[in-house]
Image (cartoon, rainbow, N blue to C red):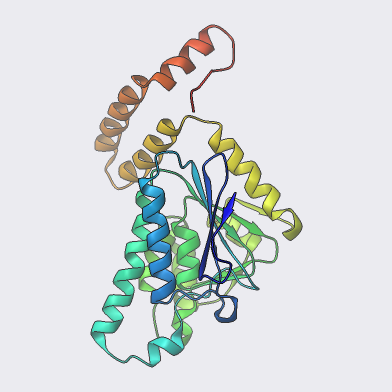
Length: 263
């Protein structure tokens, strides 16, 4: 496992399984998503997208908070429409990179995840939270409706629950986030790494091609009507079955043995 410069805004490690861990490393600013942090995330995600041996990404953070979203002090210091448009476009590009990545992205959440930080959790494919984690789309408290965070939020959380978060800006705790579908699992803080590890291991044991096709298909069909979704899904399964990994899996099932996948 290799570690980048510990003083960098984003620390990157990669283990022998192809699991890449990206750690937000600006604890004094609660890992705010400023332009520099977003640029570092974009570069790292683009690198993973080009890496045919990568299997999963874990998105973690140092310090007391997972991510406090955009820094309002920076935003107040730049009262310029073009500056704001560039910042939100940059953030949206990072979120779409997570969405389009061919490997699952798992948020490892501790402390608070607010505004664009909550957006980051919602945008990840999976999320594991510590019991003390809290979540909010809190921009409304400062006169700024969390419009871009609403995009993944309403695709994860029931519409009325999402609207309540967006209109009130109130915090929800980890168990509420679990019940509402924002995170997959909640564990004591001292078990957070172990739980993330279990989830990652379960994923990397599966064929990479099936995981990649599956992730893409789920998001594509979600935006379609029922007829078109079934057409797309049926074609995806047919193509998937032509892959050597699926052929081996079917043969192993017939022969009552474990698949011998060439990962």
